Image (cartoon, helix red, strand yellow):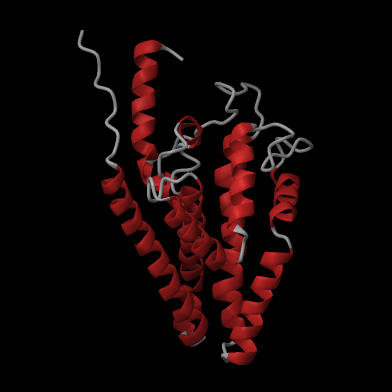
Length: 257
């Protein structure tokens, strides 16, 4: 029998061009919707009827900002360009909620070194299978003074200086930001790392929540559907994780777990 070919490694320049194109599209869409609906959308019956769809889409784009920063942390947004990765990561973290990129990067690397343990800043030793207490600890750990002051400065500037309707600010800035935090946590942290009876496949203490391609994309840019693959191949950007999933399943069929 002929062995299946080894997966091809994406050329860094090609990966960077494709990844940056996707990142640019996500950032541009987020900025367009954010400005358009916070400042210019009238609260008429049509906009209010469409508000749930707008909020969900803006929440998904907000998750995208975080995912771009995450790829920048791993250097996979623009391979071989650490300064550019940091610049893009800081931009997206600032747009998302004013988070400190360097602090988030250090915490994320600790997560990869010790996933699902007391040394993992994303994990809850006290509530390894309960989402609400775990999310509470997760939110308090990361939402410190810097994002708190940033978000409040943005809100008051929009309202008191730029004249945005406070209802628009709540609907199209506040609500999507909160939903995206829950979305990132539930699909990108809790489901892949929660404790279950069958345990985990290896020391990464992570599982992939298998789902159709589009559902994996919509929930958390493939970081739920292919989370174990992310821990196996942390250098891969979000858009290549489904390919890694196929390669890993093929490897297991040939060699076993």
